[in-house]
Length: 638
Ligand code: MSP
Picture 1 (cartoon, rainbow, N blue to C red):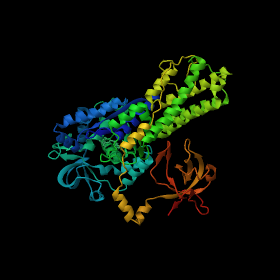
Picture 2 (cartoon, rainbow, N blue to C red):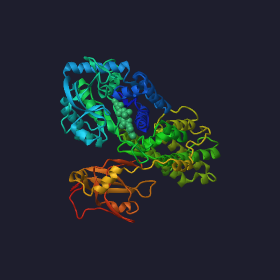
Picture 3 (cartoon, protein in one colour):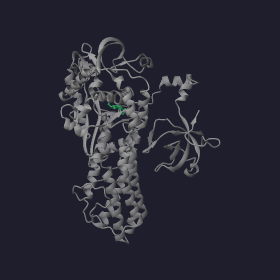
Picture 4 (cartoon, helix red, strand yellow):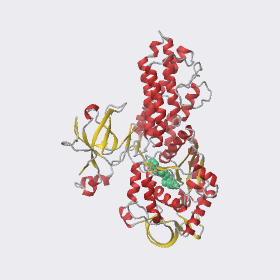
């Protein structure tokens, strides 16, 4: 089968300017695209803007300009920001483009003729803010704004007819919705009967949309229109060869648009007779300084803030943090302190110092030329092997979207190279044994160049710079082999790759402007008032027994342990702050109690699936364990 990779981002609404949420989806897609290109895949990376609908119409009216002008301006802001971030998208689609409109209308016509779109009278509630019809139950839950009652005739897509097929498909295709918690969310949602989907809006209420080809009094519902971009952009119905070349796609989305992508979109495709996307991967959300981003708190990580960070750390420093700490499986927090500390610790100290150390010694003892290695000792062979294993594992981690983990593994390798140098101390040896010093420096450099190749999709600029230096300004053919460097090559001198950042400015800014944690009065009152919780709330928490299979310290931390536990037929990884209270060895074999259905979080690059229970009183902490033996692990506690 041809090696092809088609990746998409959501299409961003043009009623907002790019912020870290949009930027994260797009950088994630960029990193994936680069990794696949690196493996020799022909790659197509699509992004763009979602331009129809009421919110856009209103924003344009408010600004006193035409919707077209408004869309041109905002769409361009997204596009130029992606260019500024040097993202390697291949195509940028706008839903107002003719190539898209044409395909939406063709699909609408096909489904209409087929009887999958029908007209009906709708009487019920409508949320203007969310631009969708809502049920009485949703209204009572209170999550929808600007709700009004609407009585009108509309067109409906027979979504309910595809519910069963969709469920069967999801159940038999594990890779279709990822990560697993999102897949379960959708399977849970599909336990209720699906309604048909209202896919039209009367023009007298909303005119800014794609006209229905079978009724000029209506425009298309914005979601039905926008989702189609993923196939209109690659020639569905207009260039079948191109379409066959790229489809199916890997869709990167955020968790808030899970239902539209995992229910509306696949049923639309089923109705149109198109195969389903390969994977829909829904990441979590970025919080900012511990709280949800909101205009009133002033903690939005917007274009200006991102630019400011990049002006200090470079583009790669920003990408690095997103890749290492980003909300792949749960939510993540963007705190300035953590951002700059991560840069200084990982990139300036670990990575930067390694490069600096090796190059200074090569300059001093080998006239700046890569030394010729002698016979490799077992230590060098081990280092080489660690690099080669990493190459093998890297891509399977990516196939599972474990980018956090990959970055962590790469950093661990950088640290191994540093440790190897500490152990061999070539700066001392150089005075007595130049030949062995040469071998050591060659081994360190060979390992570094392998790590640099694997890091390139995350840190494209700096790694390109480093690899070009190591190859004497020759364009390197990426081989992913350890001994790719040519002895004798002159390494040109350069400035520090990741200069250390003086963090005193953080204290100054935090004194001036602090995002104050606003007490959520509702929540506080609730906590005070609610002494008891209903049983249904407690039932949501899944407590299970788990047997500790192994435990180890999390590198670079004093208080974290990584536990591998057996929970019935499954194995979970947990990260827990208990290193001060337990040695890893004393935990193995214990049967502990965990919260098994907690949203996964990534801690230090490790995905932690669940939380263990412990009792803590000041300086003492003891784990909750089971009194006596149970025949197996994974037993539900009730
Ligand atoms: N236009 C729709 C998508 C249509 S796709 C055919 C849309 N646009 S959006 O601009 O509102 O959001 C785009 C993406 O940004 C969503 O995936 C959303 O999850 C993501 N984010 C918005 N805020 C976010 C965070 N704070 N953190 C991470 N991503 C979040 O929805």
